[in-house]
Structure formats: structure tokens, C-alpha cells
Image (cartoon, helix red, strand yellow):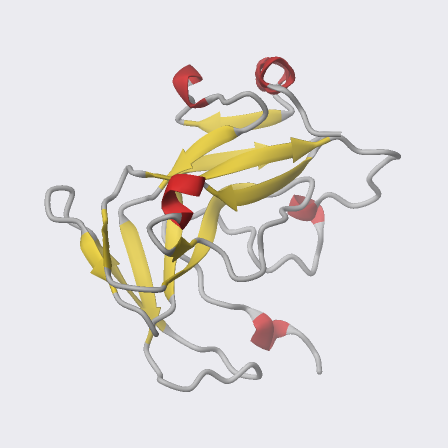
Length: 179
């Protein structure tokens, strides 16, 4: 089941959901709005290799001028909010207003894990040029209840690749897998 606004607020008060900074006006009927952080990144190479570490260049957007995203480029962004989820499964979805600008905020990674504690890295692509700004609403977190006990929380997994706390976008760590 999806948590309602009242349930999300209760879980925040219990500490099973953490959102920093928290703004009560961002709490929707059954979601919490998150905002685009000030950092974007692009990959350095034109061809990415799943078996090697693909490096990125990170840059800071101007609060006044924003940044124009271009089609055909994968941008890594980050949520302004740091989040923790200790008893629910978080899903990040784009806001409809963002989708109507032709912006996709994630390619495949909309589901988080119980125990994820970090800013969310966004895989941003656009269908036409669009100017974005740090602090603009970019997505919404939806929380699902669990059935059963969790054996290993994400932040305690030996194999977890995205545990290092950062407010910068994080590149793919696919290269750390064996295949």
C-alpha cells in the first residue's frame, strides 16, 4: 500500500522516513515533492563501457540563469533533499509538470531500497532543449509499506555501491559487478 500524507508525516516523526530539509508544504496527498539540486554531471566519454569506470564532469548550475539541457545528452542530477527510508520502499517519480516540459528524471532507477540513505541521483534526459534551475520541483517520493521482515537493509549491504553520502551526482557503478 502507498502511504498517505498523514502516514508519511507520522513516519517522519518516528524517524523511519527522513527528509532533509523537510518542508511540510511539499507533502502531497500521497507523496513528498523533491527538488533539483545545484549540481549536474555529464559523462566524459561519448561511448560508455559497462565493464569500466566511466568518469563524469560535475558542474554547478547558476541559481539565476539555470542551465539549458540538450536532447541526446544524459545528465546526472541530484535531489536537493537527503533522504533515509528505514521501514518502507521509496519510489521516485517525475512530477507531471516536469514531464510536460519533456524532461525524464530517471531511465530505470525509480525504486529505492529499504535502508537507502542519501541524495537521489537522477538520470535526466530531455526531448527538446529546456532550461532548468536548482531548487525547482523535479519529482515526488512515494512510499510503499512492506510485508515481512527485511534481512539486509541497503545501508548495511556489503555489495551496496551507492552508500557514500554526497550531494553530487554519482556515476554508474556497474563496473563493480562481476559479469
